[in-house]
Image: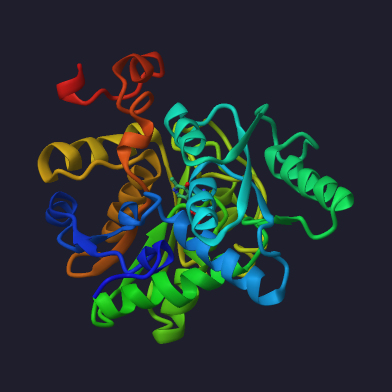
Length: 332
Ligand code: PMP
């Protein structure tokens, strides 16, 4: 059967058993292949959920402009789906994100605005700049802009509950013991958690938090505190988003890049799967969850996007060596 539009190609991604980490832990660890979405990441789902809900509520006018602050992937999703639906996209992105994502957004036709890298509390943070741009556009021409607001717009969490979570339940035949992933907006973790807990409240939900993010300390000690940093893009935050609010989380792990990156390098060399940095944090989290639950359990995590999106960074020996990070053998 043929799809009628690009929108129909979002989601329904396969689950892939990750052999080495399954062997290592005695569990079955599966990755949901979100890199196979048409825009190459898990964030196509967010883009689809937000656009469809906004259309239903009349918040997005025909031919209007979708404005969003993003680390890149949500922008890519909004841009391709927007193109397919006749919307323009204005994307606000911090300038420290990979040049591959930035170039892709330009290639796709997004109106790209790079802004300085700063904390969420700062008025110049990319999220606040996106909001202001949308407000200014609407002040000039009422109804012309729609701010997607992926961090606090819970249509993001909803689409993961309705699609990602349901798919994981079906694909595991309901025999899933744990789900774990990292957080950018929290839409994936909270939405999948909602869906799975609804089916079976005994399913464990875990947070895999990179260095530099404040969520591990929040879920373990109730304080938003961070230390260190991570090269993983699109994840790690310093505040509780509306998408993450009241998310049911049973265990949390803090994971360093040194610990995480070898998982994706081995996965590429031995199992042929080329992934980005957030997937490394997720797989490392799945291993820690497997150790906590013990052998014989079925654990699912998210393979968020392709490694090619970070060729100039985590697949670049010069970049890695400068940060004292492990270098994949074949790139040395
Ligand atoms: N990995 C990557 C590469 C991402 O771009 C994002 C989204 N920013 C995430 C993980 C996190 O997903 P979520 O926003 O659903 O928490």
